[in-house]
Amino acid sequence: MSRLVIVSNRVALPQESRAGGLAVALNAALREGGGLWFGWSGRRMREASGTLHEVRDGDLRFVTMDLSNEDHDAYYSNFANRSLWPMLHFRPDLVDYTRETHAGYQRVNALFAERLAPLLREDDTLWVHDYHLIPLGRYLRERGIGCRMGFFLHVPLPSSDLVSALPGHRELFGALGAYDLVGFQTRRDVERFRDYVRLFGEGHALEGDWLANSDGRRFRARHFPISIDTAGIAAQSAAGVRRTSVRRLRASLGDRALAISVDRLDYSKGLPDRFRAVSRLLERHPQHRGRLTCLQIAPASRSDVPEYQTLRRELAELTGHINGRHAEPDWTPLRYVNRNFSHDVLTGYYRIARLGLVTPLRDGMNLVAKEFVAAQDPQDPGVLVLSRFAGAANELGGALIVNPYDLDGVADAIDTGLGMPQAERIQRWRAMMDTLEHHDITRWRRSFLDALAATDG
Ligand SMILES: O=P(O)(O)OC[C@H]1O[C@H](O[C@H]2O[C@H](CO)[C@@H](O)[C@H](O)[C@H]2O)[C@H](O)[C@@H](O)[C@@H]1O
Ligand SMILES: O=c1ccn([C@@H]2O[C@H](COP(=O)(O)OP(=O)(O)O)[C@@H](O)[C@H]2O)c(=O)[nH]1
Image 1: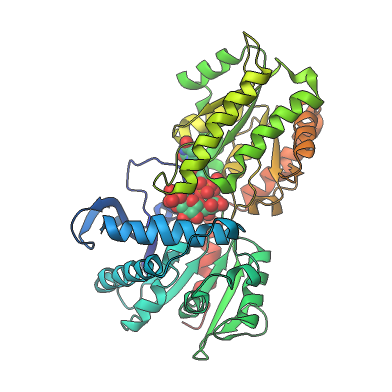
Image 2 (image 1 turned 180 degrees about the horizontal axis):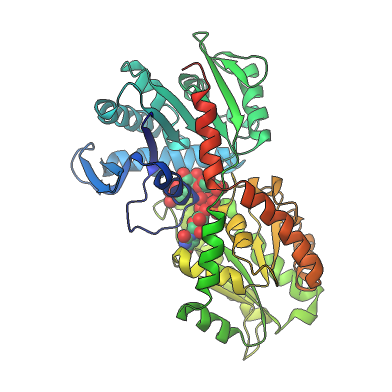
């Protein structure tokens, strides 16, 4: 059997727990079959990039690479997260592009290829992840690596008009033609990719899910919605409610209902609009005053990036403003926590919540939405309020689907969710849980790798 080699910027080393769906999902996927995981070490050094570290855990091998401060700054904090991330999340107004940081991104991708190539075998299956590493496949091919290569984009792909506004887009997105299979989260992302290839791309779209790159070499593009370890999370949450931290949260609520949100502190997640929607709820539906506690867990993310610093300041101010306006001496509507929690605790929190509030402005998938569903008590499940702009909305039709820009609509959905009869809650939850039980992380991994194995190579 071919060895699986996963490459991603973020690697979840054994015993490491941090926010971010990619690392959570790949960890679950790799543990199933063993293999090698290659990526950034998480260390920024004063000296040059490229030092490798290795950790073994059973039949898993983790090889990570240090980056210099300068490379990390150009590749991750700037080009990946100030040029690509905002563009891919439909925010051209936030794109900050320079040729220098673009060159740094290409340089780090070339270095990934240089360090990874000697570790590869001819019959490996290589699976590259996300917008940090789009050109890696092309650099590896230039080094003569001929093994099967797949790429998965965890974030959305916007329309060609937006993509084509990024300087150098042809070279960057044309590099996807070096892979044998390119995976996206949703069908719409695939459609937009095919449109892009047709209108601007190096290469052309063929019949079915086939495309041809600029050399005429054929590759495929399909959607593979990422998922979670559904059974594992259900079991974890049932046990989680007995944890001290979960019991303490429940005790602190008294007889108030809990609405929970869990997001990296990122502008794509729509936190300011969500907080305003909670404020709107208390105006439109005053019966919830003193009866509802909204808990927002928002671990800091990409703190070197100015847009994230601005958002953090904005949210601190907005929380103070909303609580100052609505709170009573014995009640505050919003609890806002900038800390990272382990899955054991989070799943217990989800289970005692009456409502999961997941309202990103754009999100590739949003695993929190799926985790919230999997963590519910089957006899007394909570309700999910979910943005139509999260990839997860395509599969979780049992949620109350909202437009996060429509604050009145979000407020009304919260009200509907809090008042929903038990029979309807069970019916909606069962439909979503059936989907997640059928389509879990194992199935995601297998369907991608089976499709990759079925390409010409
Ligand atoms: O690595 P960071 O910069 O700390 O960011 C964390 C991850 O955020 C993004 O996650 C995406 O992948 C999820 C799983 O497919 C998906 O559910 C979510 O919608 C995406 O936003 C990013 O794409 C990852 O590369 C980061 O590691
Ligand atoms: O304090 C936290 C906050 C989030 N997460 C996890 O981080 C992932 C977030 O993934 P999602 O797809 O929702 O968004 P992303 O952060 O990848 O954009 C989920 O598995 C969360 O359970 C976590 O472990 N601890």
